[in-house]
Length: 303
Image (tube, rainbow, N blue to C red; front, side):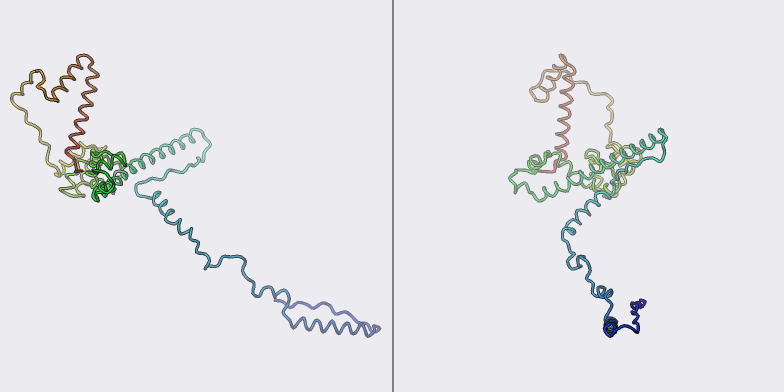
């Protein structure tokens, strides 16, 4: 720092009196004392306290830490495997109407594709998520501790899930978990039933191999899975009934023997003579109910 120049010394003439000389001596003494002390400009720079800045010790703000798990969960939801981010909206760099329409059209198709993919993945995870929790409730027999007589009564009352639906979900849970890492498609419970015996007999790798083989032909259906399992040797071939040389004679129409099934059939025949469409609707509804009952009895996992 350059030394400051002292103020000019007043010029004292010969004709000045002694009072003026005394004033000059006082000024010199004052300047000497000033030079012996630090300059006034530098004194504020010595221990300047920092402005109001929170010290590190006072920084631990707890709410920040509390929000970290929620933020991490949000990131996990966005970046979870199998889920696609929705494309951001952007405008094209052209002013041509046809090109702008083409640009926006591609964006619409991209949004529709992502929405469909995420919907299928979400339904897949729904099946697994329900299955894991239903399995835990059943294994721990929690219905006994909450006033319900059976597992099915609990699921029906609490979640609106019928007993046979809950049991079907439990039956295919292992198959869904085996396929979770190889496909993001929606895993429907009915086609997965084909893979249940393959999982039990040959393991998860055989399930994944069968799924991959069936998916080569497009949409994965229960028929495609059966054919793939037969082709790979994981399921016994379908045995078709041998045609008899003489087909059985049709049973003559007779009066009902008194059994409930015969009475239902005769009632539907009588209805068909009056209203064929109504008879068909009732027969189809009866067929669906019987099929559902058979599946429930075949796949019943117990109360």
